[in-house]
Length: 159
Image (cartoon, rainbow, N blue to C red):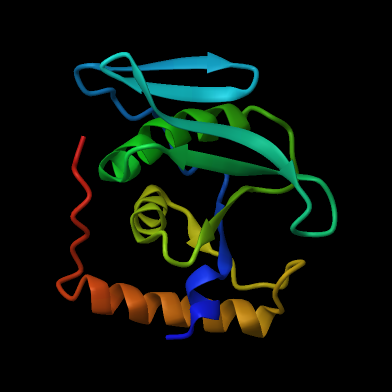
């Protein structure tokens, strides 16, 4: 695999009304919501942050999901906890477009978690990729995931 592929971003789309409830918080986890987004605290220490931000990946401002996690071990569960809350809030906002997220092609745990939550790969054209390029990127990611997780199991801790 080339270094270019390793750093290529891909998009995933969450169809409206795909998430019906927030993910529960494990013991010791709390969330704080403010106008800038939602922050997850684990044992009172910041662990992850998610927000809706405007991006121009499609040539116009559209709301997209932005997520960052300070601890890679918590990446999957933190993503579920925060994104489930943002997705439910997004469903209340009138929009003709679905929520989408941008991931680095090497962010395996987040891609797998997003897929399990209902996000689907975006195979169309956007500012940085043609439709053919998007499809090729997802084919490579699929091959990479099969190589990294040959049993189809991602070792993200369950919540």
